[in-house]
Structures are given as structure tokens and as C-alpha cells.
Length: 258
Image 1 (cartoon, one colour):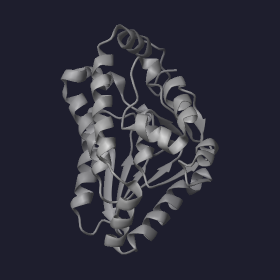
Image 2 (cartoon, helix red, strand yellow):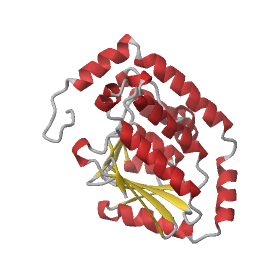
Image 3 (cartoon, one colour):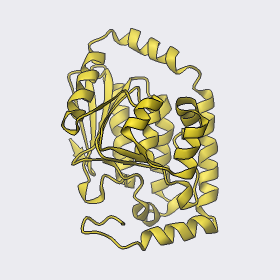
Image 4 (tube, one colour):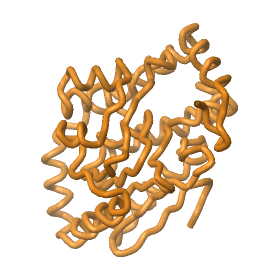
């Protein structure tokens, strides 16, 4: 099925969720957050589904949050924030493995979601960035906890605070990405890995994944702490000025800012 620029398809033990909003470089709208959450929840309930697969389209994974849509939906007080929060709280609660195939741009949540994935494959042309601080905000999706754990403090600070873009090769060496493959092979590689997972004994996979992930209580607490600070920062003069500047940037023919 296809709902609000998100395609969800279950089969062969996989729950494939694909972002298909090329005009906005797969920037996540309120409706897309809702559709992704519903797709993940449906996959968790489906006994035939063993693994979730996250994919972009047209050479883009995701340009992050659609700020215009977020503000149009009322910001913190609106449905947009509630749908985004539902998604963030859901990520650490998923019991089934998550495989991501990244080709091209991965901005903001397009990068931080990868810290919740069990396997990540990316093309060499992919770039990863988190411009939260540039927007007067703070990291989200538990990335302030997970990034230092996965990348080390120095690289996590460079990614989340300095806002330095990372290449796929650099994240491969840092341990966030499993393999860098040709752009035409990203989807096949991710789906092949998902099929292999889906063919394994489900209970053994779930138990092993739980052991590897460890205690998730600190992660849930960190996500809530990030949310509180995110809300505070959204009403700050810094964030208001940064949002205004971003939304008034010249746009290209695809409707995205330069």
C-alpha cells in the first residue's frame, strides 16, 4: 500500500517501508511520520514479519524533517510534534530487527534513525549530517546517547554539535555502517541481508538482539530528556531566527532550499 508518500509492503518475512516523496527529497511530513509508525507497528503485530527494512528512493534516503510542514501543523502544540514523538518513542521499543539501505542524502532524523538499526548498508555517494544545532535545537532520537556509544565522543560531537557532514566511508570505519556498496546495489544488499535474517529462528534472533542491545531504560529516558530540551529550544530566539532564515532560503526547482 502507499500512504502519504510512504510505501509499506510485507512479504517474504520482511516489512519494507520506503520513503517516496522525491519533490521534497523524502523530507518527513507529519503524515509520513504517522504512516511510518503505523507501518512499523503493523509489522510488529504480523507474525509472518521477521524484519523491518527502511529504504529511500530516487537517490535520496531522507532530507530530515519538513520544517515548513511542522510549523504549519502548529509546531510543539500541534499534531506534527505528536506524530514525530510517537515515532521517536517507538524506535527503541521495536522487537524485530531493522535493516536500512541508504543511497544519497541522509539529514537529521535520516541519520539518527540509523543508530536504531541493526544492519546499515549505504552507497559511496551517501552523505550524513545532523544540523540540529544550526537550527538552534538539540539532537533527537536518542542520538545524544547512542552516537557517543557507537562513534566515540569526539566523532559524535563533530556530527551532532559541529554539524560536520560524514561520508559513508567514514561511518563505515566508525562502525555505524556495515558495508559501502555501489549505488545500484544498496537495495538488493539490504533486502538480501533482511531475507537471511528472516530465515533464521525468530525467537533466537529476538533473544540475541535483546542481549546485544542491553538495558534500554537509559535510552528511553534520554529520548524523553531530548524531547524536553527540544521543546524548550523551539521557542527560543535562536531557533526562531534559524527557522526563519532556513524557510526564506532561495529554492531550487525541486522545492528544496539551497
